[in-house]
Length: 195
Image 1 (cartoon, one colour):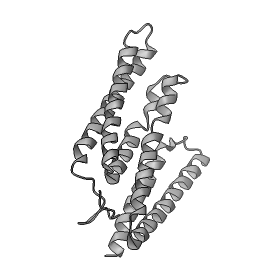
Image 2 (cartoon, rainbow, N blue to C red; image 1 turned 120 degrees about the vertical axis):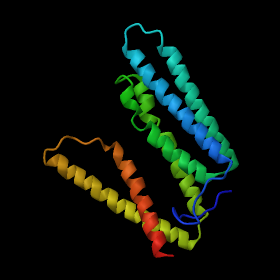
Image 3 (tube, one colour; image 1 turned 135 degrees about the horizontal axis):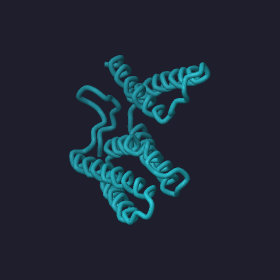
């Protein structure tokens, strides 16, 4: 089982098991293969009378199956730290996929909903790790989440104010990344405070 400590730096921390390293690499390869094949399939779908749509979409599903198989292996191992990393990486990989599919198509709907699966995996594994933490680790996590919330709220309000001032409409996909990054910085700051 993974260590249940919440520091992101120093000798202690949430680390995946050594066995999960290859699974994380396989998940990355499968995700990259999915992205490439799905993007090429989206282009082929826009082309008139293209015979490559079905093979490319089947290849994208094969890449997704490889990523899912690697995640299943980590799940069966009970490695919540690796699942948390896989969820974060999967969300980052899949966040802009809906732009590569024709608007209004079933592919666009699938690609728009796809990042929610790794986000749910990230949330679930994070909650499992939090349940295993002691009081100090929970306090550090609470301070990190509070810091991340405040920074994200400030970024959202700043973006809304800039839009109201007449700047072009922002793509809000980056907001989840701001929250994760701000929470990471909050973990580092809270960790240093309690050393």
